Image 1: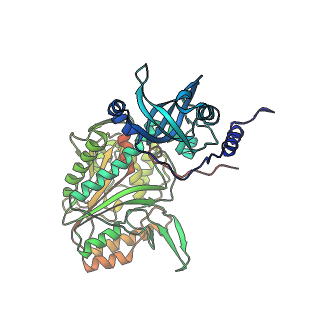
Image 2 (image 1 turned 180 degrees about the vertical axis):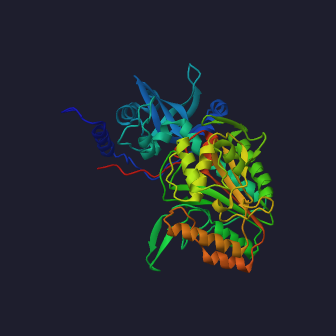
Image 3 (image 1 turned 90 degrees about the vertical axis):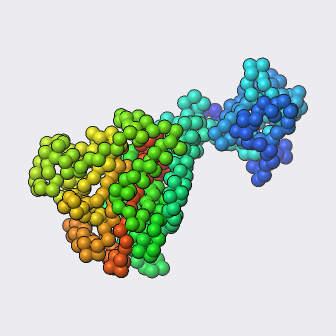
Amino acid sequence: MEIGKVSEHDERLKKLEELKGKGVNPYPASTKTTIRVEDVLTVFEQLEADKTSISLAGRLMSKRSHGNLSFANLKNNGYQIQIAVSKNEIGVDSYKDFVKLIDMGDFLEITGECFLTHKGEQSVMVKSWKLLTKALLPLPEKFHGLKDEEEIIRKRYLDLLTNDEHFQLFIQRAKFWEVTRNFLKDKGFLEVETPTIENTTGGAEANPFRTHHNDFDIDVYMRISIGELWQKRLMAAGYEKTFEIGRAYRNEGTSPNHLQEFTNMEFYWAYADYKDGMKLTRELYLEIANKVFGKTKFSSRGYEFDLAGEWKEIDYREEVLNRTGIDVLNTTEKEMLAKLAELGVKSDARNKERLIDSLWKYCRKQIAGPAFLVRHPKMIAPLSKESVEFPGTVEKFQIILCGSEIGNGYSELNDPIDQRERFEAQQKLMEEGDDEAMMPDWDFVEMLEHGMPPTFGFGFGERLFAALSDKTLREATLFPLIKPKNK
């Protein structure tokens, strides 16, 4: 700041003190409104014709004075309307205070009547106004807003205020989960809640967050799935259909499409298998496309696809073989490492399971979808039922969109002996240093010994919403974690 120049913050502080000196409370607790801005816009013609007196509240997004008449835009809940403030209507002193002491960013309550300007713009002529909140810092510059990605996340409230597209994105995201919830309830699924703090992390392969439970004096983990092993217990208990929408946590790297905290949905359906699941999940995705986005054809991340079109079935083994020459059911770690190096794929994989996954991730980038990826190798799906028709693979599918897996479902393994053996294999991987190996849950095995019916389970998360919105996962998350600013 230039020497001797007063900052805008200091200027606004002076205005704050002047308002207080006039007996004005700059932060009152209550306001009395009769209508919202969006409703004024909906029934404007009727309000104008009837000369109805209305009271509404919002934030000033602009302010311009022309002698005895000032105009401003009042915004609330994503909608804004022009207000006109005239010295003749509100009096000399009130008008002077409005011009001198009220700034862009301040919150006001105004009372007035609707009218059309000579240019035909819908407006409200102010008869009286009341300050609701005095803003001490200015808003971002009107035509540019926040541009730096880190600043957008750190000051998301300003980004949403000044970027209508982003504001609407998160309204759409809320509808995404609302449509999902309503679809499942309409299909007879019961919404449940399962623990977010666990003794063991089950249901996925990921590195968990660890914390300490002081009362029990034990280490516990933030969940990495949305209650998979818990919801399966509910199948054993006699519930036929359950689902949960909630937060999951994975202590892994950050990228545009990977976050440590995110929202997922998982449902479980007794007496159904993965083929039943394919039909239901395709129906769910179409419901989301139509009700949330109003279309089935999408262009996203350089891919184009139509959810109302054909959903091909892609054989995992054949796809990798065709694209890389590697047969994942009959290969060695040495062969896979050599192929990955040849393809220019960087991988820190240290075992066969991870090397197979690295080869598949190379292949998936070339698939726009929609497609069902099927017949995964048994070793990379420790909770899926083995296929009788295709030995060595499992009854599982992943939904592929935009070159990524965006949905995962399978016939759940309910053979306790097989499950114990697979957990033992995962335990060995953990002991060998694989941070993403699945943590065994021996209590879950005991539950299977009591008996769980044939069950299909499926999950997807906000990654689907991000893909359909053509956004990164980080962009489609309201408040992703960000490092604190250095003071």
